[in-house]
Length: 133
Image: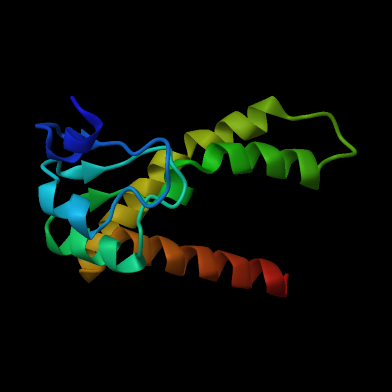
């Protein structure tokens, strides 16, 4: 598939894995996949793209959730730097990413909000709890 034709390719999942901003208005008009889930950071050119994907019935896995493994590993290094690296704890936390995505998708479906908005609200809530603690 030519790079300029990827969005219009017959596929179940569109997985942007390189450049940010790959999901934008022009690309959305050609998108045939029903799921957007990739490894690139900042996949959406704007938050409105997430709203439009949701409106079009395309399931978007927020990039910072689906890609949380690296952050989880770095957090283990930083938060517990005086202790041996706990590979089992990291693996357990990474294994929970799928459950977190399920929670986001379920809340999105229940509330009629795009998954990105749900994930952002969950992240803000988590950070607020941590800031108070």
